[in-house]
Image (cartoon, rainbow, N blue to C red; front, side, top):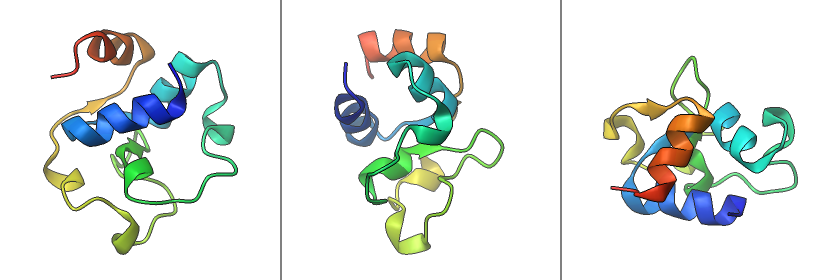
Length: 87
């Protein structure tokens, strides 16, 4: 599964996942996960574990549904399970 596919599912289902969880599933470093990509609403579903919010985003860049999206997926195992049946 690619980063774009994961982000598309998170966006479509209104779920947040940490940089670490997504990076681990993809075999990347959390710090380099979004390198070279423009920040925007779709990528705002990947968030900081401590704050539950994306790092370095202005309010306009964050999907308005984010704050009411429920619990954050914090581990790669949890994310893998969710990706098998995103609901």
